[in-house]
Length: 409
Image (cartoon, rainbow, N blue to C red):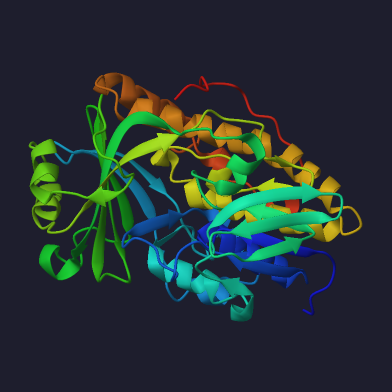
């Protein structure tokens, strides 16, 4: 579709930024993406994208790019990390013959593959690398962006998709340091040739223990096993948020493991370690000609697997509001915030609640919660309301959610 309407800059060339650019290009907006790094790249690890977010990406015309690179996850299985005992099983995918509530794929991707797919949907002439934002100023005529390399550009509107340490957010609201959430994580990829190409099947496993859990699943077909761990910790040591980890330290942190999980962790050679940081849920998502999305607006713990998925929801819903409100994009931004803030806040609370439940030392309490939700037809972690969202039908509907979990980190 030929571009028309106001000029829009997206600051941040990550998953959320490129999903937003693709969605806006599809409905005809002139969009340019500015990324701080010299080349596009994601850390080598896996990522889950749940059904409702996939629906939004499909509606943005991206199905042909996603389907060839995604692993369809059929089930989410919780097991004891100590014994391997199965605690729960949730069917995440239905076949066409048995249509169910979750009618889009639940995908696992290699992060780099997913970024390449999203970036490939955007006109490369509109992507600018090595552009680190250092200043932003808004006037009645537009928004001027100033970059470290000396470039100055003015756009009608700006979308900040530059993550939890957002320069756009800082320009709007001042410095707001992220808070350490009391959890440390490791990431690793293991060759499936080492651990076996059938050991996990088409499933994502959550191995739960006291104060910790481990996620495992295949990516790139069954070439690699993605391993992500989380461990409650009183202290995070390290200047960076993602630093090379020590595989022996990882193994020492999880001394008692079921045989399958032990085999995977013992196969780790290279790992990244990082502290999980976040912010209190906030209504400061932008104003005037500037809008924040994704982690720049609503960072959350990864315990609901919704960080990228909520950014993808943002991308699609924002494209719909801007398409519908071409005559008044500022009002479209305000309408977007009115619809999205309650849902994103609820997902942030869900992520916190999941962390507390999954890491609970009281196994009976956890199992009772799993069973109670199963009886009601929900997922063990009470997340059907997230997966059931229909972005194409509900993009302009504000929904309220119960404050069932405190907003503290």
